[in-house]
Length: 628
Image 1 (tube, rainbow, N blue to C red):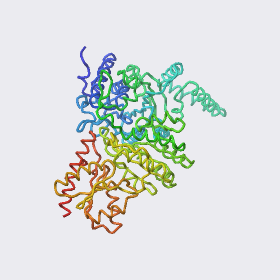
Image 2 (image 1 turned 90 degrees about the vertical axis):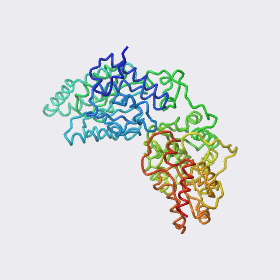
Image 3 (image 1 turned 120 degrees about the vertical axis):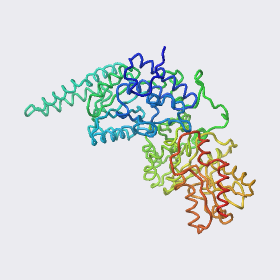
């Protein structure tokens, strides 16, 4: 059978294909996605489930003239393949290759950059109103998953779009929700009627006729609408969208390309805000991903035949995420006040076992980071000890709540900030490289970062006995592999640790930059430079006495952090030196440059940004020469 995919260079090539050919194309696209992601790793199950959707959208609409916004982008792999990126797709998430998420700079078919959930409706609404104000005619389509509807921003967008009566289409790709067959059949029948322009015109004409009846018309109209609404609650799963001002269509089989094309064509000709609800299966077409869609949501490279992941090497050394979950369970077993909160990431944050062991003390609030933080503040105000486990990049979404609802009230909420620093192939939307900068300026927060898993455990213990709010920030990936203390000790707040004595220059590092700094010091010794290495441990409060002592002794200070230099750890050290009259001490800070860091392996990105032991030693030598 002749392959079709090789002849697809853009969406226009889909227009003349028959439905059997489109179905064959879907199989070929899935084969390419599975083959590629088995080698590169990536978001597999969501994108497999959205292949038929992407084909139908591009067969009906006219991209890039018509604008498609893919919420998050986990579903967008087929979209990339169909829009001229079939060959580059093999480089996805690799350094110098295409991104795993939609990027405007990558293709005109990517209408909006997405990486965090639930932004698509707001973006689509902005594009729609921009089109209206500039006299455009293009269609605006937002594609979002059902998980995105757990975020408040999605409802803000829906509410505003309905209020404005905006001419846009929202496709709700529902790959989780189960709808009973009889309800689904009735809803599909009614939505087919409602898609028909003749039906909508008839309803509008009838409404006008009733309302114009003298004296009683308005009462009759309200009564009819009341009856319609109550009946809708009985048979329509989309009544909430209707209430928000949307025309609801669905639910439909999201793997029936012919039905999807028919639906999109009819919806295209309607006006106003409309939402198309489709049902899909995550991992569609790959049995291992269908059976375990969570594991294959974001997967490491794997063997296609067995589904088994690569990366067995180093398996004996746990990840920081794993150590977090185990330590929190251990501490919670001895303290019934400890509770855990996460935002749709129980597996990603290491809390799955905790949720099974302490089901009444575990709260997954969905993709709702703002709510998670304020909810935790309420728990703390009620006498509990909440631990909020979030990725650094997602904590950005709840910054106001950290300040206003936690820190301002000095509530004992612990923030377990995972994925601090460079995270690798997910790239610029997921690197956690701003947290030290935006958190350290918040009053009452204690902020710490471990150099290894033993310190990490001690920091969690410290945070949970501290009477105010605290942050433990740790990196993605494997721990160091050091022995663990049997009894967890509490660290003195704001005390650093001398890791290596030295007289010529002091390298003050934080978190996962301590060991590269020790390596740099060894390299420097061969160059005749005697470097001290300090593990600061705390970003806030800093160990002022220790830093002042080494500054007076060495006069040359180099700070190292895996965070944006602007406003980060190095800035904090500089401010401290200035406040203590040590502005004359020569300071050089090493960290991430003032730009968004692209995707690639974490090790390669650290090499590119100068955060390896060798790079640090070279930078210190250059600074040492300049400092004199």
